[in-house]
Image 1: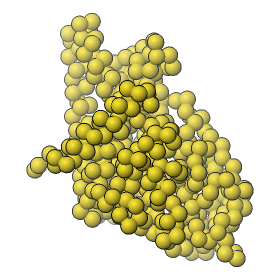
Image 2 (image 1 turned 90 degrees about the horizontal axis):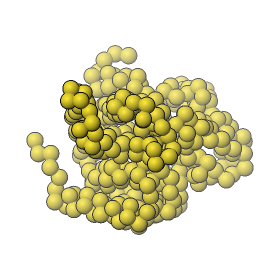
Image 3 (image 1 turned 180 degrees about the horizontal axis):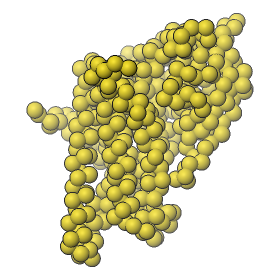
Image 4 (image 1 turned 30 degrees about the vertical axis):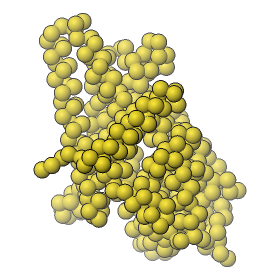
Length: 388
């Protein structure tokens, strides 16, 4: 097996790394954990768009570059390695654009794809509901078609940056009289429309990036239906494969990983030999797991480059990588002890408080984007062919 990258791919990695180092020196951003969640900067996203690093894999006829998924993954890996603020464009690049290209009308592509590529507009995804998370087909938000419009009523939960976005990608029930998987459709909705209210949710890490979104008789033109009416369930499944098979599920707290490796090296002379050997063994185990997760991610990416949809492989990658992230958070807090619990003041806290905030956010890792239990079911049923 040859796990090396091509010279062109290595040059791309160097280009991204140089760009990020220049931005860091200029003070454009400060490295953070979970940058696709907590790093929101429209200005930085526009810079990434100017470099041609949004919509890299999309066809040239819609403004993309027809690059490989491997090349896109290299860009994302380097952005997240530095903890760069990519949240403003990330959902548009990762899943909204591919969904529009696959299922959207020509008019929707013309209206939205160029603005996603430039980093001009921000999307959120309105899928989950209070009683419809892993069992998504039980969603109750409804969209009723009448006189060339759809009228949407309902509530969505865990919508990333909804309070900062321009558009939401909404999944709603359009036919309540058929099997629950068969009466679902997808829409693009302008968040400035009357009847939409958004409430940020404060989590225990101190962030409010996830939101509740309420739709009260929100009227949208029928042209903002994505794909076919009542075929939304099949469209959602392909979108989730794009969401789960990315390196973001491995690299989210990488800046913290880099910090703890340097911290332990600096503290070696102050730690009893037996304790240091134990800590070094724990970190070596994490490094091995990181490399395994990286290979799982690139396996799923390679399948996309071969024209295959990696449903089982993406689930496997996401499952392993998010569990690794939680183990990393736990191990770091054990190494730092009470020192790691300090938050906020960079004069006194490790890595500007990243240890504590990442640890407090860690329960979310194995829930968002598909729970551990749901992913195991996908692997069992679709990967191993086991009965339900």
